Image (cartoon, rainbow, N blue to C red):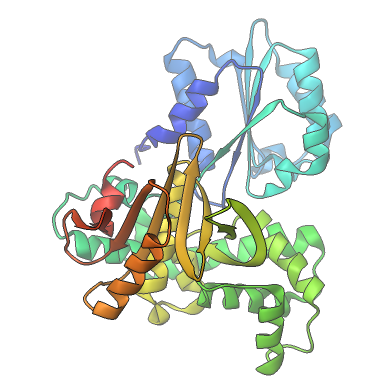
Amino acid sequence: MQMIIRENYLKKMIDAKDTEFIKVITGVRRSGKSTLLLMFKDYLINNGIKEDNIIYINFESAEFDDIKDYKDLYKYIKEKIKKGRVYLLLDEIQNVKSWEKAINSFKVDFDIDIYITGSNAYLLSSELSTLLSGRYIEIKMYPLSFKEFLKFNNYDNTNLDDKFNEYLKYGGLPAITLIKDNDELVLSYLNGIYNTIVKKDIVDRNNIKDVALLENIIKYLATNIGSSVSAKKISDFLNSNKITEKSNHQTIDNYLSMLEKSFIVYKANRTDVRNKSLLKTLGKYYISDTGIRNIILGFRNINEGHLLENVVYLELLRRGYSVNIGKSGDFEVDFVAENPNDIKYYQVAQTLANEEVKEREIRSLESISDNYEKIILTMDKTINKDYNGIKVMNIIDWLLNSD
C-alpha cells in the first residue's frame, strides 16, 4: 500500500532537520510514528542524502534483538557511521536499556542528526531531560484527524455525517482504514493495541500488581469523558460499587500518571479564566482515540456527546494549542485553547435545539469579559450563526477547515 503523507508532521521534521536538537516523536502506539520515520527517510533520499548516511533501526524488529543496552547500541552505530553527516532514525527506542546515554554520546562524538520515537512519555523522563537538557524537540503525534481520515479512505465530501459517525466509531488509527469494512478484524486489531498498551507500556514497565484496579480506572475514565475526575472520586465510585477492594488515593493517582505517560489518556487541567491561574481542583481526562475508547466500553455504549468533546479536544491539540478546562465565576467553559499568539474559548454541544441548553452554553461564554474568540461547536446544521459575538459552528465544518 502506498504511504499517505501526513504533511503537518513531516513538515515539523523537515523544519527541524539539521538543527542541533534531538527530535523526539511521541504518541500512542500505532498512531503512525514508524511510518513518519520512513516518510522522512524517503524525503532525505529524494533530497540527495546518500542511503549510506542514513541509519534506520526499528527496535520492534527481531533483527535488532542483540542490541540490549546503550553499549550495544553505541557499538552498532559507530560501526555503521560513514564520512559526512549521518541521519540516525531510531524507532521505539525505549526497548534499549539506558538508551539515552548512547544518544548523548552520539551528539558528542559524531556529526549526526538524531530522530527517535517512542510510545510512552518515559522518553522525556527526568534522566533524559538531565542528559539532554535544552537539546531536544518533542513532536507530538496523534491519530488521524477527521480531515486525514477522509483522505486515507479516499472519501469525498458527500454524506459527511455518515463518514463522521464512522470516524467516531472506529477512531483514527491509520491501519483501521485497511480493515474497517470487517468489524471482526477491527475489534481484534483495537483489542490488540489496547492490551499491548496496558501490558507493555503500563503493567510491565511499572511492575503493577493490581491489574484489575488499573483496568477499572481506565473504564471509569472512558465512561466519564468530559466529566470532572479526581483520585478520590474514582476511589469512592469503585468502593461504593464494590468493584474493587478498598482502594488507595495515592495508588490511583500513580496509576493515572502512568496512563498519561502511555498516551492512552490525556488530562486537561482547570484554569481560572479571569486571573489566568491553574487550579488544583478536578481536571478532565480524554481518550487518545475514539476507537480505543469504544473497545474499552463496547461499541454498543457509544455516547456521541462525550465522543464529540473528545474529538474536539484532540483536534485542538493537533492544531498546536495548550488546552485547559475553564472556570469563569460560577460557569464552566469546555475548553480554553491557548498558543503563544492567541486564546480561544470553546463550548461543545450535540445540539442547541433545546433552548435551555443553548442559553447555558451562551451564558458560559458570555461570562468571559475579554475579547478573544468564543465558539460553540455543535452537530446542528448551522452556518456561521452569531449570538452577541459568539460564533456557532457545525463540528464537521470546523474539523474540515483550518483553525
